[in-house]
Length: 106
Image (cartoon, rainbow, N blue to C red; front, side, top):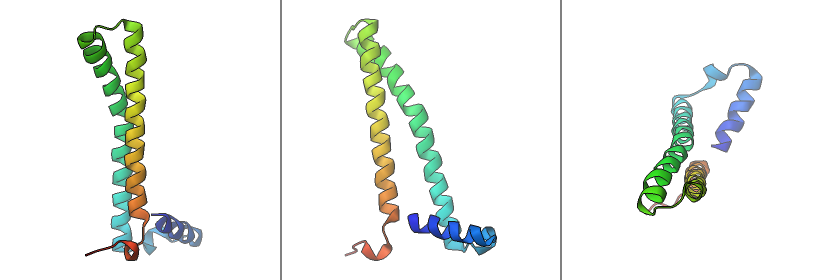
């Protein structure tokens, strides 16, 4: 992925970026943008959803915590969800960045 963006920056300097994309690079760019969109939506909506669900249903409902405690633990839940999504995104980006020759196939 990093090699792709370096090549993209070089071709943008030449001024013919769109014309210089091959079909495989175009598909790669499409996959990168698709992944970025999916992870962006996940990082916006999943922590909010986990916060309100855990606060209302789990901490206030099942565990009968006070509102103040439920707010605190709901916030911790949202932070954990954000970190899980970021870790998944970094793992996916790391796997895409590896050259095909380094990936072991049996």
